[in-house]
Each structure stands twice: as structure tokens, then as C-alpha cells.
Length: 148
Image 1 (cartoon, rainbow, N blue to C red):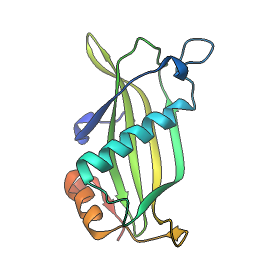
Image 2 (cartoon, rainbow, N blue to C red):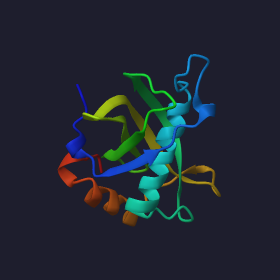
Image 3 (cartoon, one colour):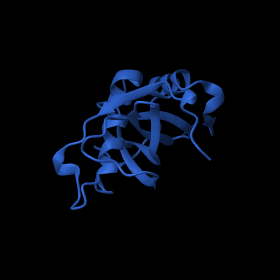
């Protein structure tokens, strides 16, 4: 099932660096996780204002669906949204698009399970109330499965 980009409010441009390429001139498969990380970090900073001093975030799981290759000359953006919120974990979807003369073309999709984390105690912690509410409000409540 293709992702519906109208469900996404947050989008950020991602630069493709020469060092991202493999020997065949395609973006290396492992680099996509870095692109997702850039997009998530921008989302948390710009849209959610996540206070990393109260609670950090670590990854519990990542999934990637490679649909079309990316090359150095491609101009890409990454859409991000929260899709599930639990007590201490939440899911995020990522969609990498390539800008073409005909519009945006979906090249890669991915899901990450993020965990609110207390680095001092070295354990997961409940998602801070303010950040939880901001994610729900930003990503439209009917689109988020709130398991709390």
C-alpha cells in the first residue's frame, strides 16, 4: 500500500553527499537510516520542540522498504509523522521522495520504533506529557493510534 503524503505535515530536505554513494553510484542502503535520523531530528526540534534534557530518544527498531534507487543528482525530501504513541515508545513513518519535473516520486518508506529514554538512569521512561500532546496535535489525532 502506497503512503498517502496528504497525511504528512512535516517535510525536510535531505542533501545527498558523494560519500553516501556505493560503487554503482546509488545511495548505499545503510545511509537511508541516516536520512531518516536527520528528518526525525528536524521534526522533534522544529515541530514538537522535544526537550532532550528531560528525556532522550533511542531507536528500538527500524524497517526500510527500498522502492527506487537514489543517485547523487537527485533532489530529495523526507516526510515524517508519528503513527502510534504508547507509554514509553512511539512509531514514526518516513517517506523519502525524489523531486522530478512531474512532482514528487516516492522512493523509500520506513518505520522506526522510538523509545523515550533516561540516559542517567539507563532505562526507558514515559514519554513526557508535553511532547506526547504536541505529537498528537501536530499529526492529527485520528491518524495516530494512541495505545495509552
